[in-house]
Length: 501
Image (tube, rainbow, N blue to C red; front, side):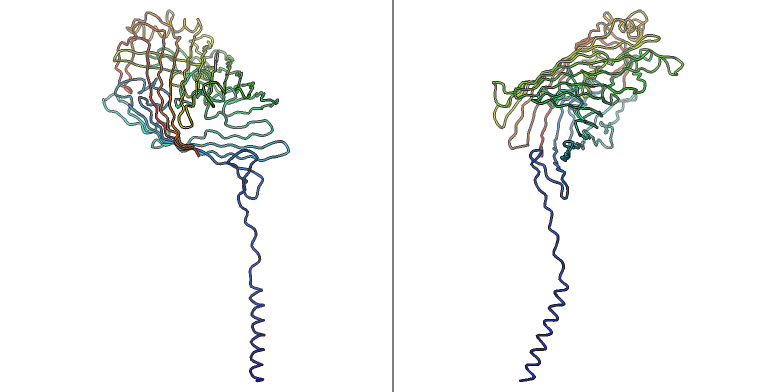
């Protein structure tokens, strides 16, 4: 009995010792997991970054585009192989794009600090260009990137205490930029653009009740310099306008905006000042050059909501005038229209150039004036179907001195393609108009998935008449010879599938 009692007590003591050792080896209590929390301060889709007071929202889209009868997808077939309207012109161009947006916001004693980024990865099909031998070469890099691929930085800006710093939509542009009719086509004239942003430093003051004003500076070099034509460099290839001859960028564009945003819609007035800084008359600085001049632009925009045609319907309208600041009318995505060369048949051609300014040998800088308008009506038929009609118009006008340098005795146009080259220009006038009209239909079978079809017609109303003697352009298969100068037109059809997230 004593033996059994001793064994029992010994075993109990051992278990107590072992339990104490095992308890000492147990891990400490784990730190609570920080789950992602919804941030309701800035709308749907925001979450707190774990461990911070910063809210973040991810978004973007994936789309597939097909442009029929265009080489520059959704920008218009008004120059190069597309404008040739022959076998070098694509019957279609395809593009796929994936877009990512990152929006962060942090509440501070100075207000909300916001950062915003949007980047897109695109793949676009190319086309063929001719050679002097009769062969062709494939351009698989339509976006200037390897194998047709392109990384685009659309927006990258910081907003703090009323300031916007970085790449954002120009304060000159209307909120819909170049899409008054929710259109796919990016080449509409008649107002400001930069829907992918422009570098700027802007201050915005909010006065309450939807009234605000902005003033700032922005970089003109990438999107607001269509050309300062040096007529002394003119050849038959550029029709007597000459190559562009900008000097360095010395002053940013100065932009101001006043906006009233109400339940009924929006009204906006915008102004911009643009420096025209030319280079020299010749190749060396010793050749001298004309003095620079300031250009300017003004724009009015109006959006009307809650119209009787249906809930969510809108009418967007804008009008613009520029003098030496052409890109504020014929915007950056409409670049083919600012240097239009459209052929028809075998021997017809129409021209339209719209630089900021021109100058001839020993002459002063002549600013080019433009005016234009664009608008769109957007209608919702039901929750699944919607459509829009839209249009745009722009007019380009040269000064009398510019026309004399181009069309007068010894003028570049007459000398290069007129009587001196065997042509017969009966009317020499570089002024021109360009008009565009389009419509689209959108189907949204489920939320954030939309299929769109769209058609756009463009007409170039140019003021030259007679016959031009042109040099050969083997890149688009055009031989040297005589071409009848006349108005031109062209069309484009676009198809799109897009999924937003």
